[in-house]
Image (cartoon, rainbow, N blue to C red; front, top):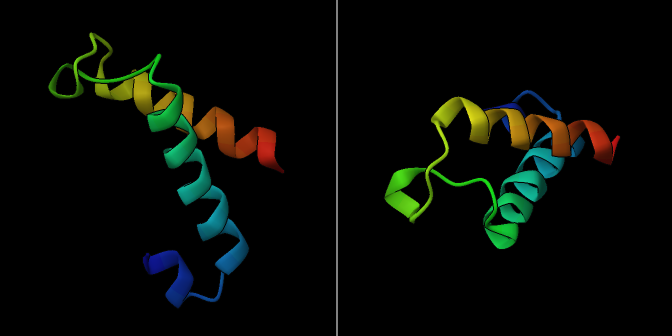
Length: 54
Protein backbone atom coordinates (compact mmCIF):
# COMPACT_ATOMS: atom_id res chain seq x y z
CA UNK A 1 0.00 0.00 0.00
CA UNK A 2 1.14 3.55 -0.65
CA UNK A 3 0.77 4.37 3.02
CA UNK A 4 3.55 1.86 3.74
CA UNK A 5 5.84 3.79 1.40
CA UNK A 6 5.18 6.84 3.56
CA UNK A 7 6.51 4.96 6.57
CA UNK A 8 3.12 4.31 8.15
CA UNK A 9 3.34 0.53 8.46
CA UNK A 10 1.10 0.35 11.54
CA UNK A 11 -1.64 2.29 9.75
CA UNK A 12 -1.28 0.07 6.68
CA UNK A 13 -1.59 -3.04 8.82
CA UNK A 14 -4.68 -1.64 10.52
CA UNK A 15 -6.32 -0.94 7.15
CA UNK A 16 -5.49 -4.36 5.73
CA UNK A 17 -6.70 -6.03 8.92
CA UNK A 18 -9.98 -4.10 8.73
CA UNK A 19 -10.49 -5.09 5.10
CA UNK A 20 -9.80 -8.73 5.91
CA UNK A 21 -12.16 -8.62 8.90
CA UNK A 22 -14.89 -7.07 6.75
CA UNK A 23 -14.52 -9.80 4.14
CA UNK A 24 -14.46 -12.60 6.71
CA UNK A 25 -17.46 -11.20 8.57
CA UNK A 26 -19.42 -10.92 5.33
CA UNK A 27 -22.31 -8.88 6.73
CA UNK A 28 -21.49 -5.67 4.86
CA UNK A 29 -20.64 -6.45 1.25
CA UNK A 30 -21.37 -5.02 -2.15
CA UNK A 31 -23.52 -6.59 -4.83
CA UNK A 32 -20.54 -8.04 -6.71
CA UNK A 33 -19.66 -10.06 -3.59
CA UNK A 34 -23.21 -11.29 -3.08
CA UNK A 35 -24.44 -8.54 -0.79
CA UNK A 36 -26.67 -5.53 -1.11
CA UNK A 37 -24.58 -2.81 0.57
CA UNK A 38 -23.35 0.29 -1.20
CA UNK A 39 -19.64 0.99 -1.61
CA UNK A 40 -19.94 3.77 0.95
CA UNK A 41 -21.44 1.32 3.44
CA UNK A 42 -18.45 -0.98 3.03
CA UNK A 43 -16.08 1.97 3.36
CA UNK A 44 -17.83 3.09 6.54
CA UNK A 45 -17.61 -0.43 7.96
CA UNK A 46 -13.90 -0.67 7.20
CA UNK A 47 -13.23 2.79 8.63
CA UNK A 48 -15.09 1.85 11.79
CA UNK A 49 -12.99 -1.29 12.14
CA UNK A 50 -9.80 0.75 11.73
CA UNK A 51 -10.95 3.11 14.47
CA UNK A 52 -11.76 0.19 16.79
CA UNK A 53 -8.28 -1.22 16.25
CA UNK A 54 -6.64 1.97 17.57
